[in-house]
Image (cartoon, rainbow, N blue to C red; front, side, top):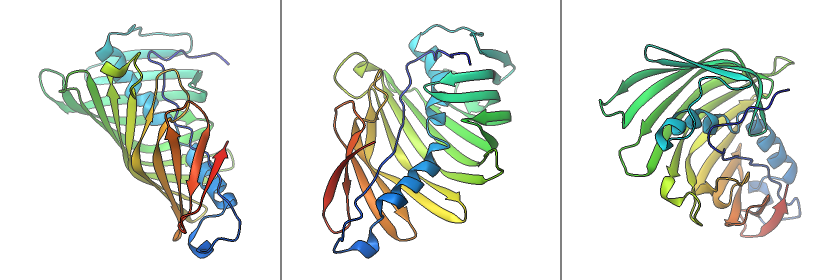
Length: 259
């Protein structure tokens, strides 16, 4: 398998967590560690795709190398569309194969704001075949700040024909002034639902998730998790680049975990 070097270092959104199954005062309202693991497994089908899509536009804005061909991916431009054909690429640890097309829908003459519809043709992400569309609205009107709003309404089909649906919205803000400094390079907010095996998993970012270029992990922020009225939240800490966090339970108890 060939390695695809992305044009900008990616921000890996790995969100795996566990929570205590000790006897809690409000146990009836709290997710167990097994339930959290199932929820995060469902989320892993889509994790990292939106970051990859935003990087396709970031490249031109920050002046990085703009090649139309790489070892395993080829870019082409036809009219208002950009097509990328991936040939068994690995992007930030995710396997990508097939064609995606970004078609411009609207935008100003300066190119600082606009939107794209994103479609997929025989496209597989981590061996899930994608069906449906995404839309991306970008806003580059603020100096050294790139904002992407990505709306998703898709199905992910695995090798056993198990269908996972994903619907929601995320906002990514890239802060160019923070590159090579101690500040957060990127932050993410939003909420989304995933339905798998007739179970709805809810995700909501309570405090923006942030990260640094060169670090594969979320460094700060709080993610709220819910399944059928059961809940827990995961606090990613105060800036360390690691796979550690604190699970907060509805009764006020907390537990540090790593994954």
